[in-house]
Image (tube, rainbow over all chains, first blue to last red; front, side, top):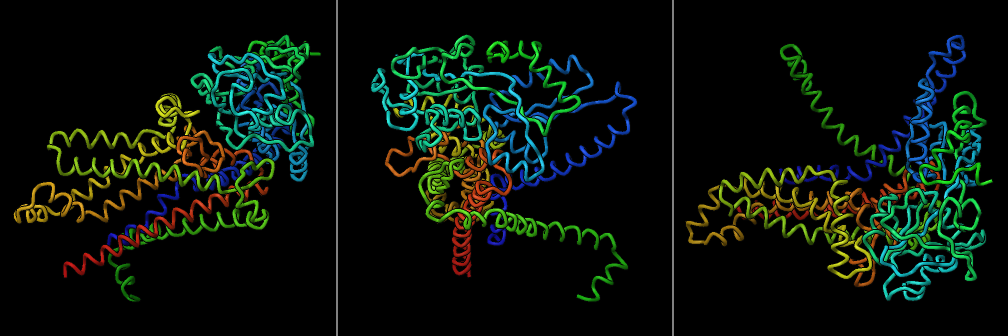
Length: 319
Length: 304
């Protein structure tokens, strides 16, 4: 009898990890179907109810970059205060997650801290979706270390050598005799991809350099901050808006001649800080209706004021 | 068989309905597991055709650039799970023996519910504690470069597996008939001899189940592991690997599933990782079931 009982165990073992993935996949499919049906019915509804726009309710699904999630939430809240008829649902997950959802047709706006890749455009077009890019803010990526670390400044080449595993001890870049622990976001993060292309590969599109296999891939910005705060060996990077005062920012230069610059709104605007990027929102085709209104509001002073408040860099002043 | 249902239908329609319901829900378990396996195979098997075997069984995992080496993930999972088992099985077993056989009644009434409460702590909470409190401690005590290591993962998993191991093993020990102990004591055995030579061996199959359930929780655990092991896809082959970060199969699936497009090579490889996880757990489980089966047969021979 005991033997018979024990054969039921595989199901229990099996449940957590694999089942989770399957359920996710199934849910994704179901969500896709539901959203498509909802969109269709919404289209039908909007074409019939044009006479009473005052009572209409707009719902915008906004998914993507974790770097931008706080910014997107702040925008959504402020916009909803001004337009009570609009509901904006914001979710993080990473730029790749946002693009995947955009390609699968489940959302209206994808937030991204990197540009869409060629393969992603191809896959979107296979699904009859044309992603349209909008620059909504700018951001600096700060390279951070433990406050007790004596290293103050690094060149891009040094950071690249550190992250590819060529330099493994702090004493080689002017610090103490300590091993270097590399921290990075997961590969679905736009910050990860941007850092790989612009810092590790130094902007060279032919370079095949990769993160060293020893790189710790942490699932969140908070994880990177927590580890950098308590580990004197650590080096990490993250969007400026997420860097807490408990870690030390490194002054970065394009090459050994300098100048070495700390990240900040001013150094991003005058282009002296080398690791800066645009932040994007992608829509399904040219935005219309409430989505167009929302994006216009974001790029106007009202939206850009929030950008500066959250530690990012507004787009208008960067021109 | 043919006329039985007809007779029941006339007398006990409710009984037939209940019986069908129970049978359907019982059989549906089997149907579900078959469907899961079919789904896994459909999504995962293409990976073995799309990716060259030399790449798939390489040592570098960097899927966004086409490196699909599974070895670091497989070895990472095995290292963390074995570490957790080594920590949790002896301690869990000893704790169960203490609760079931040694502790006074009043203490047992306190310890048992507390252990069961432990089992209910969400894994994210344990992962969070592990990340903020355990990992700095591990780094300082073992002088490791970082505290986010395979060992921290094993510690958290061992902690998660313990309540399961203790309460199932304790139930097994508890269900050993009183007569066994009385007989041993009557033959002049001491209390310890009774526990280690009679009670524990008699509860062996239940204890083995407890261990398997505990380890099963460990190998399938995702969230806490993802938060404390550092997720670096390196090959854990050197002696100090226990004190270095690793990336497990479950953490990889959880971290990357949200990002991939359906039908891409990366998507299929993640399902292939799921298949490998399934095969490993199935083999371990089969081995344990066979061990129990043989013990049961031996016990029957002894009794007859």
